[in-house]
Length: 259
Image 1: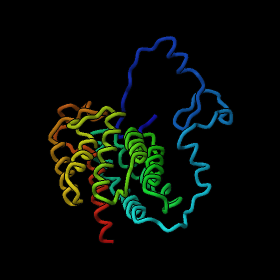
Image 2: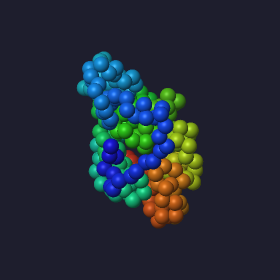
Image 3: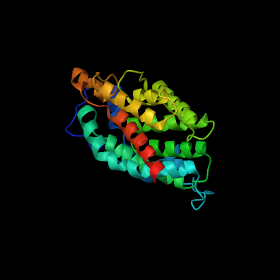
Image 4: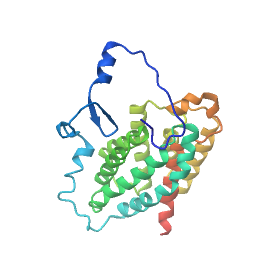
C-alpha cells in the first residue's frame, strides 16, 4: 500500500506470531485494503463523519446568504490548494510527501461542507469544516487538525473574525492537537505556529510575522514528532510543512481583506 504522493519506499518489520498471522490472513474489505474473498455488500458502513455526510444535506440551505465569516473562510479555502506543490516538496523532504494533497483535498471538502448552508453560526460552520477536513484524507495531519477544529468549535464563543476570539480559537486548536497527538511547544510542529500566532496580539499582520518567525526558528531545530523525527539531525535546516501550511492560511486570510 502506497502513501499519498510519497517519494521512495519504506519497509516495516514486526515479529510475526500466531495471532498476527491469523489476523493478517483474515479476509478484509476497506477503502484502503482488500484481502481474500469478501462480499463488499456484506460490509457494514462505517460510522462517523463519512457515513453521516450522506444524509447531512437534508435541511441545509446552500442558497442562503453567507455570513461575513463564511465569505472570508470560503475565499481562503478556495486558494489554499494553490500551495499544494510547495507543501508536497517540504513534506517530501521532512515527512512522507502527502501534505500537499492533504491540504488541497481537505480544503475542498471543508469548503463543500460550509457551502451546504453558509448562513450558519461560525461554530457550526467550523464543526462542519473540521469534520470534512478530517475525513477527506487518510492522513495524520488531517485527523489531528480536523478533529481539533471540531473540538474547538464546541467551545467557541463569539465571531472568529474578532481578533481576540481568533486568538483563543488558535490556542484551543493547539491544545487539542497536543492532547491527541502528544506534540508540545518546541517539537517543531504546527503547534508551534498556532501558539506563536495566538500569543502575538490582535493585529493580523503581527500574528503573521510571529508565525513566520516561528517557522524560521523551527527550521533550525530538530523535529521531535512524526516521521520527521526519524531524520534526527538531518531535519535541521528544513521548514516544517505543517507550520508553513498554517502560515499560508493566515497570509491568504489577510489577502481576503483587499478583495
